[in-house]
Amino acid sequence: WTASSIIRRLARDDSGRGAEASDYVGKSARVIVPVKAGGVGKVRVEIRGQNVELLAVTDEEQPLTAEDDVLVLELDGTRARVARLNRS
Image (cartoon, rainbow, N blue to C red; front, side, top):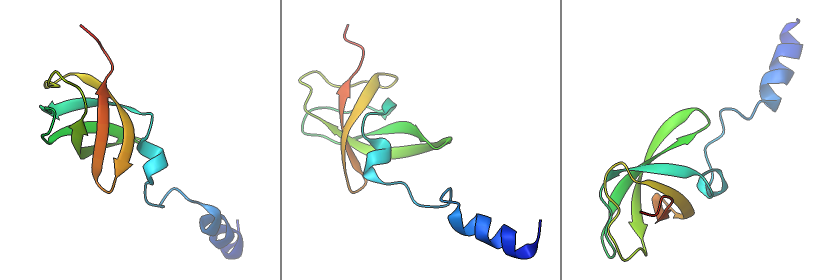
């Protein structure tokens, strides 16, 4: 490897790019702070091997409790709209 080939390889590497909304949408997440309709909670989702915590809102009638699995439907800034994955 020459210095110039290493620099070219690093220039093509996008592993350092920031996560985008599309990286979150469709991912499963775990509720870590309960989320109720009209309120804000928090979820944890894995993005590129890293756990990321996001503020979360839901349209669900029943509150989402800690440890519920949810699906990220959309991301608006740092706030995720989520829906329950496991129906009881």
